[in-house]
Length: 407
Length: 98
Image (cartoon, rainbow over all chains, first blue to last red; front, side, top):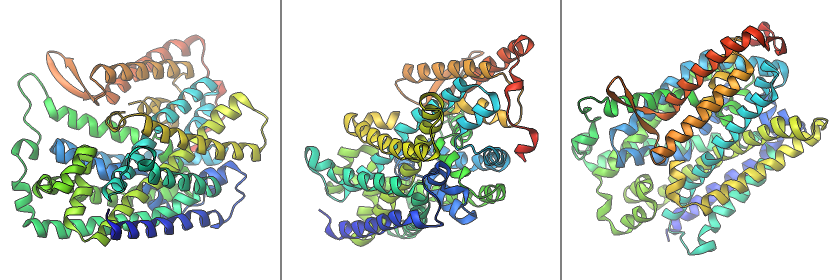
């Protein structure tokens, strides 16, 4: 077990837990109103929204999976970079309109808007259910990210004891989401993003120096993985796969309930437009971060028996944790792993709040209890956020890791 | 591949109310069903090899299913709007969007 890394990790985790519980008092609002609990009172300014959306869209799973894709499959993994660039013109043009109409009519979810626009509760139900269904596996994927770094610190055990750290982390997450609503991930996101920036900048400076420069790193990548392979005759091959993946993902990203929740939490349309301009900073970081996948190839991690064992358990998802273990002193490994684990908490919290908003507004109030009071509505949302997280936890334990990755 | 099927009902609806609510619902069902089927048929991978005019075009399933969704929605809206328009059910007005 890696005691130094674990101690740093636990200290940072305890720090954000305290922030999470304290966040309910920040710009205090009446948390028995759904828009106060579930949208932070629509009061977040430019910088808080930047941290919140950055922490929400660039998740722990992204930091693990994108380099893992480059490590395993090669250049196709770079689709994540054009994808997260194309998304911002869409954010700039389209989403201020959504914010304005939702603000005017008190809508909390996309399905609320559809209900008002079309007067069709069944269409709203379809939109809401799609949101919940698409988000559940996404929450489970955040757990995968957390599971990998906890395992990488040597906290492995058989059966329930092995899963205990993950369960504890999730109980903490559930508790502060319940008490503080969207204010908790908004405040924690600031810590998370700073830690992530520190870890990525350190990695991008230190690791290439250790490996003998970027030239050596790229020289170690087989040519077939360095560029997209030229398509065979009669097929567009990897070219069209790459382009459609990037474009389709860009069209879909801001439709996810957790993205819409982040957008609607902003204090105005100007905040959203400004964020479309400054959020690409995260895409620059993602581009650098994805190169860690190539660095992991060049570092020859498989030759180190302790790290090769990690690959056996977590497959290519071990590329980033393994690279940090091989390249940095233990205390910094603790910082980087805490960044990833906290990077899982923020989106998981926002996703569970977003799905809880949908359940409450578009199923509970629409079909089950149309005459509920505001306090009942907010209470139901808090309860639903717990159910969603319990569901994700079951998801991850009941299904093998392999399956979770492909959903 | 699921969430993108809500694009016509949410994003396009921010700009136009010409699309019919029921047409959107049926279009959504087609895209959702087709996308799920395509994903299952390639063993839960994101890419499906389309065959277009003799060329193989590997395509992100979400995007292919969205095109089908849009075609169904537009064609049905054309039909439904002639005898069963639901445009009077809109509670929002143009000024709400600015």
